[in-house]
Length: 451
Image (cartoon, rainbow, N blue to C red):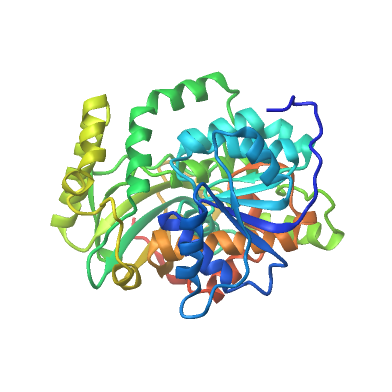
């Protein structure tokens, strides 16, 4: 790779390039991008195998003939091909996972060329390592790098912000618990890549802790009231009709990173060449967002469903710690996930029949003066919900493409650097765009809690 100080010549040809367009999720991203072909001046598909990319474009274009979209080849192990790719485009959309294995060379090339980068990663160690290693250089080269621009973790980020903004002063939230419910008329089948990323995350959990110990402590938001109690292993949340257990996902980690960034920058992140109008809008937006303790649980309408979650978690937690155990998990994903993941992924019918609901149960105080009173418990509850289609192949592409369209059209109002999605896209019209494309945000109830 060229030296860090060397300038890479750029000839911008494309608005964006989709990397990994022939993969399970990548082809659905292409399908979603084609809906907005008129809004994109030009885009290209990139991958290792031109034949598979052509087939993916044909599949995504059905029932119409494929449009004349360029097919480019690259290899993540070839830095020069990545630099060439990134020097031709304003934005890279990376769908090539697991990101801990294949993501960093792409980020490095984007940062070196000053190209912007979005991905659908849900791997905390990768995201935090990229922030630590490339954050300062991205500011210098004019690159914006944002991971987790899919179901991980935009619904959690925007969902928390949406719930937080319902707490009208003097009311303040103390904690918001998110409950994820996956539903289907057929069967729920996940992407093998997601399963593989989770297995590798368990194997490398110590590296994440080591990385955090090596970095300066982030600012912690000041949250009114006591820290929430730990609570039972299995919770029955009657108001939303779910049994639930804690979900060790990226969502809570990404949300905490956004809240830390907001604590350090109380009016958000100014854009590179931000207009006065947008600056005023950004500051007004963040003034309505109140921090809260945040956690995520996965829910089921039956207690048996929760025991399935626990069983799969135990398989992954125990077997993911050894090389042989990981081999078993990745060799027989359908067995050890009790049918939730399989190597060939879901069928088109299974994708179309699936959906998600993400409930946000916020507890807090009807008046912030009450917080200072001894032994005062939250006396108010606000429940909101984010709802949309299947998470991996429909919701994720919708979110990624809408993030891309906002970035391309409003780049002057966005910062340079490496950030979680909430702090970047929170003040934009991303929520409104998602609502226009099948992902809803609703207030379910506001009520008082008995003492």
